[in-house]
Length: 169
Image (cartoon, rainbow, N blue to C red):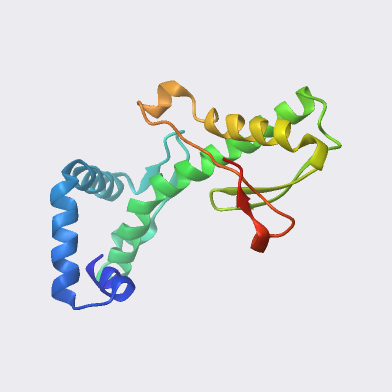
């Protein structure tokens, strides 16, 4: 929203409003999509991810405007963030299957997921093979028929610690 934009970018509320208006004028299909999600959520009481996972929002029925507005914001974000989470789960499963298929179980260990990042511990002698396996598994996690022409791209970084990470490409 405009207030969050003002807070994050600095400047005046008028500048934030102008940026907001210009953004949605330029990306009018996005604005239409967000309005459709909001109106569908109000009608149904829930939203769905691309894979059909539902999230319900009781606050959409609230008589209190600030609770209703918060529920609307969550309803708008849920299909996008939920679909991203679904894709990450599919990617993790695909990676796990491919690690086993390639016999790398002793060389590759997933340690952590942070939003759209996966952190692995990989034996140095398997870095090239494992990093390519992970990248392609992540990029192929979203079935093409569901991607509607949008391709997910992944990139990798390597280092002894987060502070020492360097791009693999």
